[in-house]
Length: 307
Length: 128
Image (cartoon, rainbow over all chains, first blue to last red):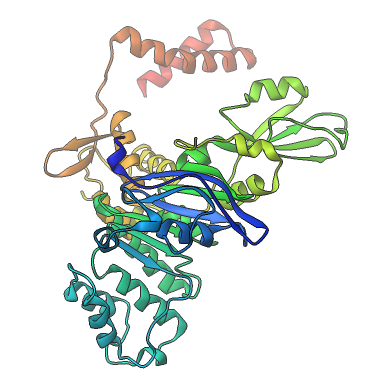
């Protein structure tokens, strides 16, 4: 992958507020064409990271770059290739939808009125309605449409579906899929809804403890992280530890371990505990909970470009 | 015949990656006889949109199925179910069959059948 294909890069990025260090050395490198789901518990720093990437917050230390330029000093040209929808979009409530779209469009060199009109229609937002009279979900849709009007190469969304109903959410995710189809577009979106990520994301970045605990292909994550159930005749001591496991739990004769297949072999485990071993597939939510609730060993899981 | 996305059933929140669900389901359609060689798979775009999954995931499933010889790329038309042609030498194909035969023989011995009786069963199967 040549460096020019990297649309977003951070290096040992730190951000502190007063005496709280929210980002503790984020290393992330996202190439063009990926749809990346950014996951993390509440307060894990997803929004802070997004704001640092966009140059809306100044990092305390480290580097952050977007489209090859330093985030804190983005040129107008770079901003023209960028779309962003914040958690709570700032819109002008007194304007009718269509005028609002025209107003935003005036700031961009390549604005497509047709595209905006099409999306307004698809998403059922009335162009004549006053923005202030739209529902929360419709305002979210409008903000997204406004962020898409100039066909940005990189789209960053902070919890885009939080206020959408299931049907609108599905529709929204659908449009992300269509947007990223040509592999020229890159999308980074933060969310708590794992099933959305599982459907549309090609990659995931999981934040935990102010760092990136995993970044890589979603499929690879699911192929690698498995739960094994070890069963033997007598009880396991409650203190049984497995140093390389991401998560472990003892239940009588069963020892449940979440493991990274690349780091622990099943045969070795079965032999070490002289137990029968079964392998269970985990979905993203279970992997996420184990990764973020397990011990520090979890952090050793490197995705493809975590340095 | 054209295969449609409606013949697929994707569970995003299962522990099995979506590309593998797609691969398994194509294989199941082939094995189950619901699709024949030459039947066209939906385009990547059609699949992605209809099932609401990432197009790259669909391409990945198709590429792997192609590598495994389950489907073949037909230029300008898309992906078709491959004709199950014998590939490899007779020796290679025999080697592939051997473990299955071993299993059958072991089972036959467990049932207390003599070698001659096992052979007779096999002959019977071959005649069918």
